[in-house]
Length: 128
Image (cartoon, helix red, strand yellow):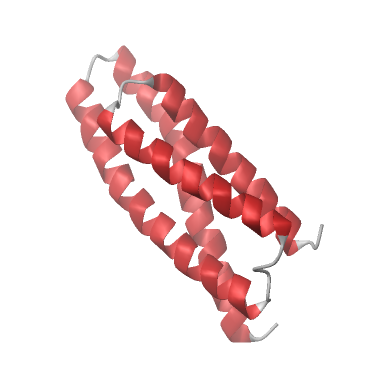
């Protein structure tokens, strides 16, 4: 693997870490604390800021993922096809969540979809 593709993979993994790690920190630490304090405005502000960062990370994930799939000729992989299907579902659920922000089940579904996508990414990276 050349340094260029190592850099693309690094950016892909860094974006994934922000996207997944942010969900975990936000869901397990920020929301419970701010909810207990009754500070809905601050929680909305943090969610909005995280949302912007998540959109950037998601955009980078899509761009770098496309580049990696093309470079490593993975488009015919059933694992990649499943990963892309889950990504499409994640985007749809995310858009629905924007409309119904208080639906906690949607937050849980977003996290589960994200973790499944990461698992499939590991399978692709390890040839499994």
